[in-house]
Length: 466
Image (cartoon, rainbow, N blue to C red):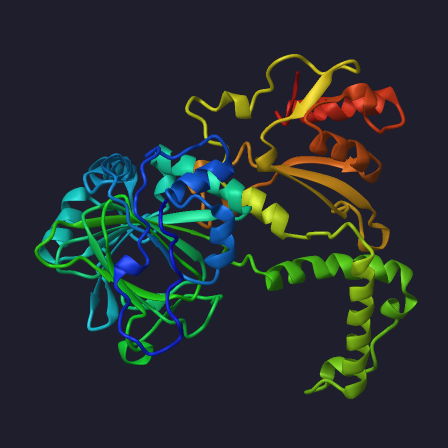
């Protein structure tokens, strides 16, 4: 049986823990990732550990997790995800400094950016890499590398959160970035060569922002080890880290896969509170009463205002206890709008053109691409505030653009989906919660409504006739 990986650090001032204390010995089994489902993909990613529930309880958002594997087949697979030589073909497609690629080096504890202007050329990148010992950082390589698209799309389904990535290629005897922490959960996959890592206790646990930390402030590393091809490292938001390629070795290539940015309970509370207030204000006249005169002009909150807000929050909490519907105003939609489309080895026609039989009243239908769809109830966006009624919105990512994933192209991002009256909610839940269902059994008043609903979903490629 493989040993269980141990959390890093006890909170005491100790020397670096040798890597063998975190190591999980390889125990045979499949060496390729399993793409049958989001869960199987994640389990194969942390193979041979494979107990994702234990990982979630003991390590996720708590402690670093390292798997060092002596598995040549897996090392070969990892190496195929990205190589230094892949930069040549990518540059020929059009790569730009800043947007697609950064060239940098850590000098005296500070990040020195060596970017040129405009388009990046492979010969210049290679020159900076060889002569200046600069690290090459490629942003969001899943836009170009199919297997990373395939991995990250499944991980977005598994986590229910956006998953980005960066590739770092560092020459021997060099370091790209100073000690820092991130606002994301991080998985490191070592692809080529070896890299020396040092991890430190967080100064800001579960940080919500990126920050560089000075060497004199962070103390001694809690953990120190070398990553080799096929190895995997995870650490939570806020974990201070730095990594270098030792002198005398070949260059190092690793991919950083990151997730859970702005995906905390605090973010979810901010997202849902507006819906709770919207509903409560319809029934509670005190919530519709005006605030005291000149309250907004006060430098400090008054005791009366603080007491009233506290009372309102308690009433909202009581109301929440008795409801099954928690309305997400933005997070669900933002996730679906910005995530990767389903992985497709072909031309993706199945994502944009409905196929199979046209659904009829006597048809049996089932949902497809369920992990790429969200159903939410929101106030009608087309009505004024005074007349807003709730509508059922269905958003999906089938038509999303892989080429702009995680690139911040808000002007190029649009939502895809459908809108239905609230009276259709029960019928939609039937479709969502059933492996397959007869159209005739949908909880709608008329046959026309039933056929219209499934036809709309079929046109968007969200259901199929079985």
